[in-house]
Length: 347
Image 1 (spheres, rainbow, N blue to C red):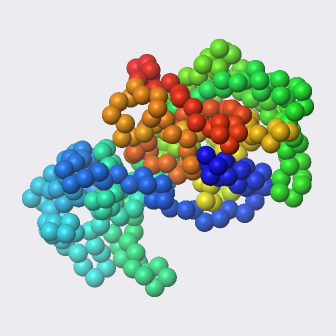
Image 2: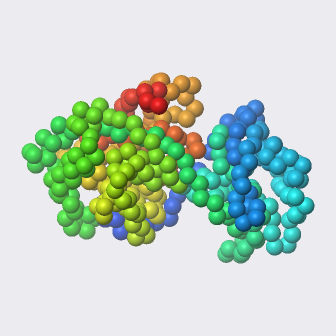
Image 3: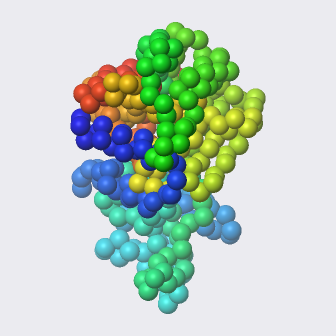
C-alpha cells in the first residue's frame, strides 16, 4: 500500500505544477497484455483498407495466423510464423509489407503478436509503407479510428465529511512546486457542488454511487463521453489540448482535465472541479481509481476490485471494462475498498 500512496503523492506533485510533459511509459508495464494460453480462442474483428475505406471482418482463432485465415480465407497467404506473405495476390515488396496491428490503448495501433491478443480486440491488416525512423525500419500505421466502451462507477461516499473539512479550514493551501498558490480548496468544493447540481445528481445518489457508460479512444475520453451523454446531452462538449493537458469542457467550463504526455498519462488534474488536496494531518483527498479484475470468474464479487497503481489513461480498454472512481480521503492503509460490482449495472 505504501508504494501505491507514493505513486499518488508523486502524481499529485506533478499535477500541481502541470509543467513539462515527460516520456510516456508503455502500458505494457501494467501487465495488460492479454494472451492467456495456447488453448484460448479469441473472437475479434480485423479491418483492412479496400477501395479507400476500411472494411471489417469477423475472426475467430487461437493465434494471429488462425484469425487471419478465419477472416480472409483463401485470399490470404500466411507463413508458419504468422507473417503475411500476400493478400489477394498482392505480395510484400521492397517498399511495402503486410503488417497486422492491434489497437491497444493508450498506445494506438501497435504490431500484434500472439501474446498481445485479447478477446474482442480490434485488429487491422495494413499494406504498410516501410519508413526510416532513426536508422531503423518502421511501418506506417492504420488511420482507422477505434473507440471502445467502458462502464464507470462514480461515488463520493464521504461528501459530508469533505464539506466539514473544507468549512473547518483543515485543508492545506494548494500550491505548485514553485510555491505558487493554486485554486483554493474552497473553490474546488464549490465547483464540485456546482457540477453535481448542474448534472442533476442528488446527494443520496452521489453518496451511494452510480454507473454510467461511455466510449472513446482511451479511458479519459470514454469517461468524458459518459458524463456528457449521461448528464449534459443537450450541451456542447469541446476538447482543448495544449500539449500538456487534455481538457473536456461543457459550454466552455472544464469538466475533466488530465495529463497528456508523461509517465502519468491520464492522471486527473481536475474532475468535476475537484483537484488533489491535502489535509493538515497529511492525508489526501483525491479521486481514487479502481479496476475490476478482467479475469474474475464472476461480475458479482466485490473482492475483485483493485486500486489502480497507474494513471487511468494507461489502462487497456480491451482488457478493463469496469472502472471505479471514488472521491475520498485516504491514508497509506486506506486505499482499498469494496465497491458495488458490475452485476449491479441496470441494462
